[in-house]
Image 1 (cartoon, rainbow, N blue to C red):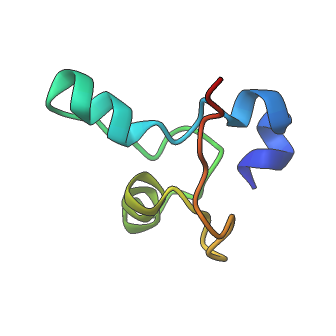
Image 2: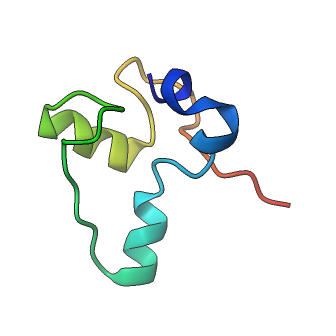
Length: 66
């Protein structure tokens, strides 16, 4: 769903919860952004697994590195 709404270029920086946690020691999550549904369990799944509810992409959303 995120790919459709954000596009290929912007999704690379999406789902960056692990990076935020490492940098800041905490992550604030919410369900008011219309990329994923409003179920907080789904939001936490996307944050931890870096995947959508269909388990895609296989290796999770990853930021491209140079």
